[in-house]
Length: 351
Image 1 (spheres, helix red, strand yellow):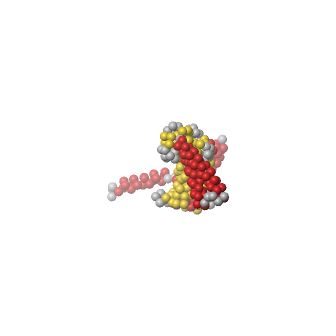
Image 2 (tube, helix red, strand yellow):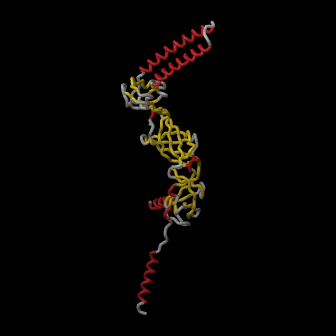
Image 3 (cartoon, rainbow, N blue to C red):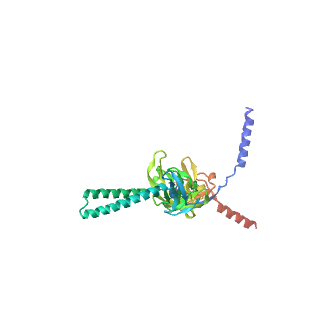
């Protein structure tokens, strides 16, 4: 029996010590804010490639020597302006010969028509001469077309590329002479997953940014949606049109695109007010008796530090925004405003 007595005494002393240190815990200090309405939009982010409004690469149609070039590096050309002239001596000679044959055939046709009216020419001879005159005209037209092919003109107004060729060079058919780009507007092509296809439509506004101008946002509108979904990426290509004042944007630029849809006003709370547990989200609602109620909510999008609340609270409810980690369902709290008021009252008494 003797060894049991010291153990009992030790337990008694420990329990007494605990009882002496046990003090009621003070209510945690928290900050609250009302549930407020805010504007939210659904947002699609993508990467797009800038393209010129119109762009064409002019190439030599035949193998020939370049006689003259009429553009400078990066210069502006107008529609119909001559860009380059290829040698056309042989074609000019062919045209002269064809024109001479055409004049001769026309003169012979005129004489035969006069003889036919007087009864000295047959219908067969007249028909033959009509055919010969038509062949001569066709030969002349062919020669003029061959000369026209050797005069390369701008199909539209725009900015020409850097010149990589010089007059006097012999080029083969298909050799690039110049690239012309109309930069008055930019076509921006970007992919949108097929799951989000219902959120885009022609005429919808977009905002785009380029790495070259990080502080600028370029506004545009969706112009066309490709009717075919790419089976490899399961995305559809969307094309937007952006104005391009000052020609800042260049074809080939990689741009970030933001497409906003479904604008709405919805209840919202600060991000810090929402706590998560697995797939569920909760907020702590302040009750009239200064206790908090853990309330499940369904959240939407996040924007500018606020979270859209789809279900669970309503505008005017007050939720805890700071100090949520110290809370449990039903816990009593003291508000930051109350603590400041008590501190001020104590300071006045002490004064």
